Amino acid sequence: MIIAPVIPIFVIIILLVIVAGLSLFCLINKRTRKMRTLRRIIIALLFIALLLRPAFGGGHAERDLSNLNIYFIVDNTGSMAARDMDNGTKFRYEKVTADIQSIIKLFPGSKYAAISLDYNIFQPLPLVNDADTAYSYAKTIKPKNSTLSSDSNLSELLSYSTERIKKYSERYPERKSLVFFFSDGEDTSNATTIPSELKGLVSGGAIIGYGSLEGSRINKIEYDGTISENSYARERFASTEHISSLNEKNMSAIADRLGLKYYRRSGWGDLFDDTAKFINSDAIITRGSDIADASLELYWIIAIGIIILLLFEFMSIIDMLLLERKAAK
Image 1 (cartoon, rainbow, N blue to C red):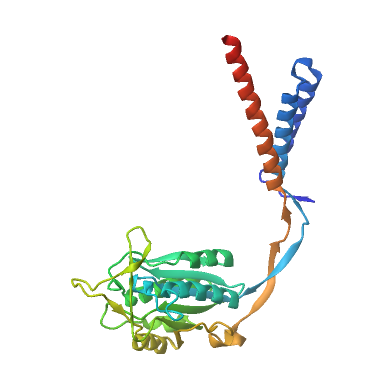
Image 2 (cartoon, helix red, strand yellow; image 1 turned 90 degrees about the vertical axis):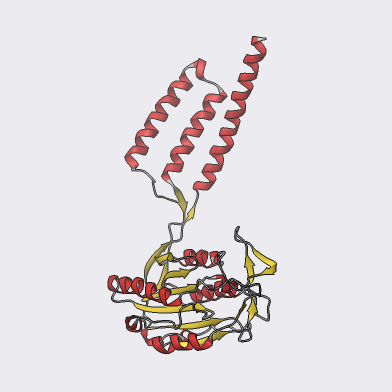
């Protein structure tokens, strides 16, 4: 068994000495030698044990790390609420979520970041090396209430992404940057502008298009965030339903400008089955120098014991109050 104290060990020793002294006094004194006193002593000792943070094992596991920074650039505007993926069984944004999770599995040990566009352009996920955190972010992807995809400005999204990737590249010059851009290609600007310096920052990745070429209605997003099953978004200043289709021309242009491959995301096929599709395998460097703790924590067992004893303490206080009230009557 090992311990990993949450406060300095000398403080815990002082607390232990105080509790031991009080315990000895209570046991010697006949007036305090009661079950209630013993219970409180046990609670105090368990609390000190909790501060020690005991664990079994003490083992460690090597975790492979790579030299990759992976950036997910996500178009999360209203048009991604069209249900035309996997033969009309999935929304576009649901497919994006699944694909991001597949990329995390394909490139374990990397650092992950996300930049998103809905009402605004922002970075919901800073650059982290925690796959669980990146997974959790992917599950939160869902278009916000907006007017169709008329709020889609992919030029601004790519410009902001370039700024963020540039800063991270300056901070980690030894790492390679992979960009995965997820969108249906609809853009409110006349033509998507791609910052010229972005290509020089990118070592690999892909431009991935979502949606059907024939187009689909966009399920209406309510103000509470729910997506309607029977209502659909309409054209701005018109009563006709908006039909959103995959703009492959725009997506291909972005891919060509960045020197990346463009993939149309359709069907159930596993696109993310080979790292060589997205970066030259020779450019990926992995190492096992990161040591992860593999111990079995026991604090939760101690916490349960404290809670149980506190419940008995609470019941004894209630009984005492009831007896005092009965005696007063």
